[in-house]
Length: 457
Image (cartoon, rainbow, N blue to C red; front, top):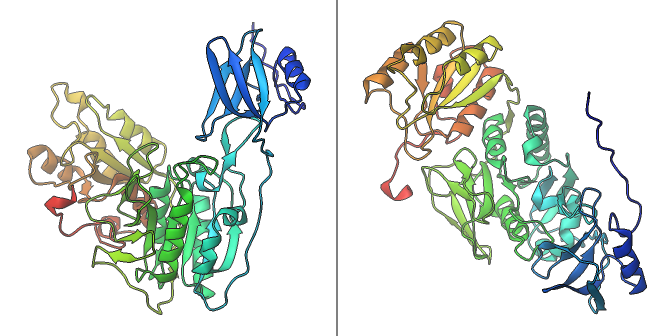
């Protein structure tokens, strides 16, 4: 017999889904969500601001926002005590304020796409939602208006970065090109951090001959938390867009966990390396392009970049979505590659081990990837090789297995990051008709490092 689906309950009460007995105690004490309370249940004593219970939560668990910005749930017994304290806040009250702008300051464009930097706490669920308009950020950053003016402030969409795909990247590229054509000094995208490296890479290819900076920035912590990093990231990104002599797509995030220095990383050389640290973004196989201190001083670290100029930006926005990324692991079956070919994929990036290995000469010969690679190459599928080591470069001539994969049809992609290689493959297949290997091995947006320094690991 088929299972019945659980019914979604919509809660209209200001208290949300709390047990009626708990709600009654709140009403008796004239306590509503937002009020500061002290809660005692058994040996537990907690002080903070009361939040409503969401539709999916435990009705017997009281949700409290602590002073450090975190939420805690306390499952109470029938003898719990609750008292109201001074320090209530008005929930869901968010100021939108755009200060007067100085006409003599450099103009930049701020484009929001969603992510944690443009988010706040949802007091119905206790979670973080992408619900903030770009103007709301200004309420806590009046100092921005002492340094830059905003030619344009707009929201393209409100999405977590995990929900972005080629259609959104095209919209972002078009918007950046449009803002540049209309004379902005630089473009700042606020963006979710999880796939920021993908977006920065693909925009680096879609936006050719940039005359001004395009800077992506975000936040690892939401704006309701004391450790919110988005404000300083945005200030630094705005400074870079207005003043940095680097006309490339870049990512601006914390250089360390402290609030002292931000870093500008080349869009094709940056990767999120930690789930939650504020300095999660690292530049791979090169130094950051520049560092920005709290006073706004920009110190350039790399000399090989494109400077500001009066070039006309060239938009190459097409993208072939039938591309994939396959990670190599011990015993990985070649049928994974066969499946992609059967599904009509036109390009595959292999994330090989070490210098770029896939299973080549296993004892069980049916597990060798070479026949599947040869078949894919014969059917016109581009096969690119990167390394899951990330640091360092792949090389096709060191070992016999590497040479064999090269002869079978694999193109080795130096020190290019797997995500960057995936984005470049989709872009290459979308914008050019043939000779893909030549384009994929050409350094177009700094995706290859000509020299890997020992100190950059």
